[in-house]
Amino acid sequence: MNKSMLMGLVAGIGVATAGGVAGYQYLGARNADTAEDAAAPATHAAHTAAAPAQECWDEEVSETAAPKDEHRVAGTAIGAVVGGAIGKELSDGDSDLATAAGAAAGAYIGRRAQGEYQENREDTRTTTHTERRCGPVGSAPR
Image 1 (cartoon, rainbow, N blue to C red):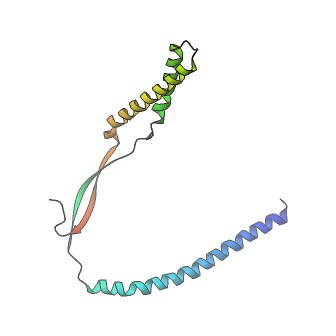
Image 2 (cartoon, rainbow, N blue to C red):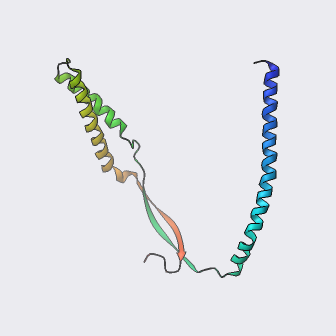
């Protein structure tokens, strides 16, 4: 790439950026004026009506985060390797079918084992915090 081609590329990017900013400012300002005109009657109506009474309360919210290995890839991979090794050992290393069957069974068992482990440790991923809620009078939990 020579120097004049590079300068032309930089100049073109600069012109395109400046045109985009100018167009956004022009169209953005015009759309903002239109939005203010459309919102004016609704704003006026909101000021004339009485605001409904509301009450607020604090509510405890518990959230459980997803496990780090949601798809149980680690358990599946480790199970497949161990199962394949056991299958190969049981067949004295002669049968690829036994190795594949051992790998498939190991993958299944590893995936299930990791799933049970993640379910048992769900309480370590649960956090509780307090949120402020507001609603019409009478909607607060008793």
